[in-house]
Structures are given as C-alpha cells and as structure tokens.
Image 1 (tube, rainbow, N blue to C red):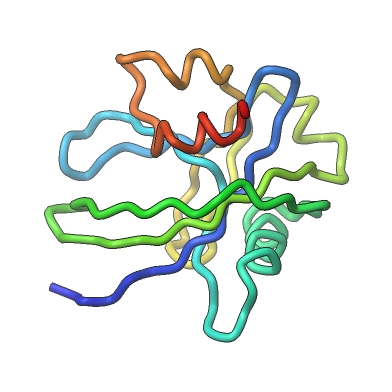
Image 2 (image 1 turned 30 degrees about the vertical axis):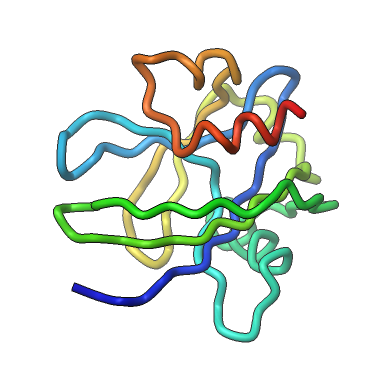
Length: 144
C-alpha cells in the first residue's frame, strides 16, 4: 500500500455537446469506464503546463488556452490497490483539426506502453446510469 497522493492534470475538450474521453476496462470488474485525457503532474510542474504536455505526449497535439474548471479529489481502488488522486481539470481546445474529424481513435499511453481508445461522447450519455465516467462532478463543472 502506498501513502502517496498523485496530482493529475486533465483536459476537457468539447466538440459541440460532446467531450473527448478515453475508454479503459476496470481491472477489478472488467467493465469499461471513461475519463478525460491527461496524466500525472511532475514535481515542480504547474498543472496547466502538465495538461499541455500530456496531450502532446499522448496524442501529439497542442492543447491550448487551458481554463481552470476546478480541483477534484478521488479516493478509490484500482486493481485492488488503494489510490488517492487530486485532479486539476482544465477546459481547452486542440489546435490540430484531425481529432475533431474522427469519432474515435487510438493512442499510446507512454508511461504504461498500452494502447487506449479515445472517443467523443455526449455529456448527456456520460451522465447515464449505465456509463461509468470519472467523475460526475467534472461534468457539472464543464456545463456551468
């Protein structure tokens, strides 16, 4: 068990009434879940810089004009291990056109070396009871 709290920077990118999210399967349940794209904040790095870096590393795109949407705290279990994260969420846009032109695409998460699926999902669909989106408070912040 680790006592570390991980700082994470996430980007909320819109395409009309949709958000760009990634899909992964829970190692605990095998069920899919969705989350905004982004990743860990490195020591000494501001979270707004981290979200720009993460979009560049993961998608090869430029995340621009990050606007602070808030801080969210999550204490959860992942692969039967306890985890604790503080999320800094920024709304912004992507300079390149290609992500907006695709309904879904794959990308490689460089730290884990795994391929993930990014897709556009409507905010209303992400609120559905049969969809697991982390976390609903983020959707509230995006739609304020």
